[in-house]
Amino acid sequence: MDADGANERRVSAEGLDDRHPAWSPNGTLLAVDSGSDTVREIWTIDLASGARTQVTRLDSIATFPSWSPDGARLSFYAYKSGVLDLWLVGADGGTPLQLTRGLASE
Image (cartoon, rainbow, N blue to C red; front, top):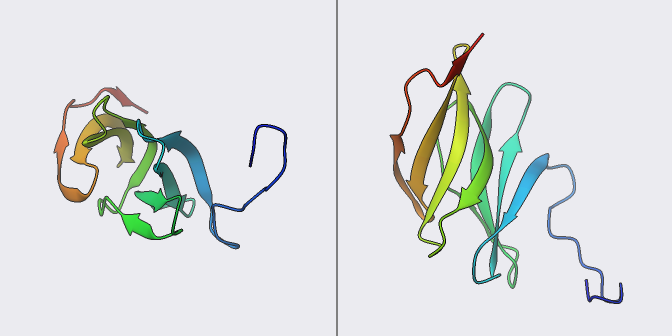
């Protein structure tokens, strides 16, 4: 929406559970985690067209996306089998890189 509250527009589609939005550095994309209570993946949403792109396919709980300053990469946390770690992936997808091993566990 505009700064004065006019021209409000929905970014997320009805029925989707998008959480933890992060604006890309150039303001054209929004990164979110989306899914269910058992599997969440990182997605980007093109704000001009509304097109959604799935960035991760880890079959875990990938959450809290954060953009690199140049907008080329996304970092995020992934929780799987009781362990939380920090990961990195290209903003357009690709093979994610696990940055930590056992950052936090139950």
